[in-house]
Length: 510
Image 1 (cartoon, one colour):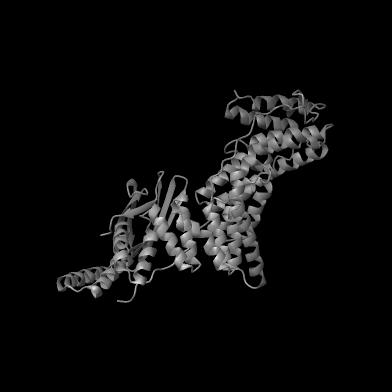
Image 2 (cartoon, rainbow, N blue to C red):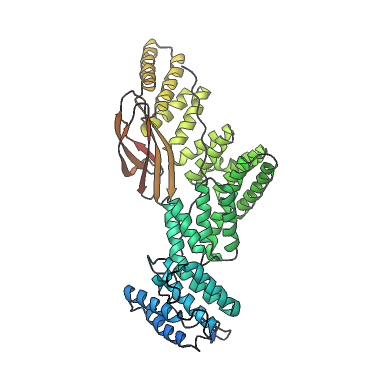
């Protein structure tokens, strides 16, 4: 039997935070502020008088914004307000006042759950050119732009009105992205930007969409916009930090995919970003791992190793995920000795993590350290019993011990056990490969593939148990029976909502 060799794997660094935007406010006649003495002062003055159209629309808008008005009557009142304002659209004495009130009515319309945002003008109450199509958000944007040009002091209040439809749209985009509905997320985010472009959230969604499509150039552009728009807002510190990290990640990915002179320029940009992120977030082990990877790719192996040395020496200062991510990154960069130290360190925090057990076990096998390999291989078999590679690893452990046996009885026992595990490896009917173990808060998503190694169709259910760091089962989830064609494979995904999940195991597939 040939020497066992561990397979390297790569970290998935990209972080996708669930973001929620606060809602809008009821309609005031004018936006009010306070002067230095605490006295009320008008900050947005638009003359909403001077035409019967405006007087009528005011009454309907007051009804539409009354908290006592139900959804049906609110929709009706908004259509009436739009109708009152549009028999002479753009041709009344007070055109700015008309644009202001019409934009307000349309913004409130668009903020209603499920309200149509395009269609014939009559759908929304327009009395002029009722059969022509209209995009409500684009038209509202043009109205508010017209008002702000004439009344620049109204920028803040108009921004509040713009956010009335923006907020539900961008939240729907975030929910779609988190649910993996990429096309819907993109469409909703772009739609929200028709009416409001000064918030970073829609751009963060578009960056996430681009990442899912491996379009790192578009992702980098949108993450940079997130940073620009959140630069001075302390309430957006978490979003800004995540965008900063992700910008470094996608720039590194761009560099690794590039060729020629672009590759060097992008790699230099990536290193600058990682250095800046690590300096701004010195306690973030993921930032250290990212910087170490960038240094390694750039040829500075000594600096790369120095960055993660503290993680290997003092793993309890970090989370198991941080240590394991650094280990996987080191393995990907072919820093195998460092990866092994980090995987071993991570196992002192979380001794049931499958990838760490496989990597450390493979390293012990390669080094010929049978005594160290046995406990690791047995635990690996406990958590990953339907992966033939596990049986190969155990067989190799017995092969090493067999060569060292002096007692004939022990030698015979080890020979028989070696053959038992090697046969299970060679004749395995199925192979389970877990390729995803991803946390989003307390939500854990696990995915992988079931491969049928036989010549007949097979059906298997999979019963997963989810473990905390002590190995205690804290949640369970079954994969419905999968029928797999001969020599074929099928993917599976399960999710579970439970805090504290650190590892998994499953019952052997029969």
